Amino acid sequence: MGEELDTLNNKELQHLEQQLESSLKNIRSRKTDLMLNSISELQNKEKMLKEQKKNMEEIIAKAKAKALAQNAAWEQQNRAPYNSSPHHVMISDSIATPTSRNCQTRYNAEETTQAELRLGKGLLPSWMLSG
Image (tube, rainbow, N blue to C red):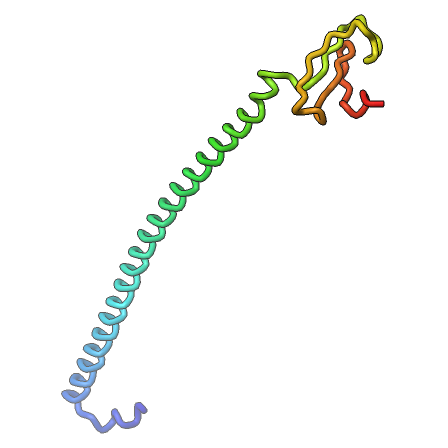
């Protein structure tokens, strides 16, 4: 490749050098433009992804708030019957058996499966009362 340069005079070599420099300048300019375009596209993509993330975080926050509200409502709904009308049988501490005539009872007939017997400080499930 360099053998052909021997036949060129000084002026032709300078012209060739200028052409090479001009070509390198064009290549570097094109490379810079491509890199700047790529950076711009990536910045736009970053901005878009940040907006999507923000929107998704808002959606998740709303969903969490809704779930917490539903859970609180559900818990309040499920607690309300227990607070307003107990689902257990109360027997005074002095009574030893559930068949005693002196037992004081409070009973909710709708919830027979969840009835409980209080003997002193202990609780007995309803299945232990039958029989």
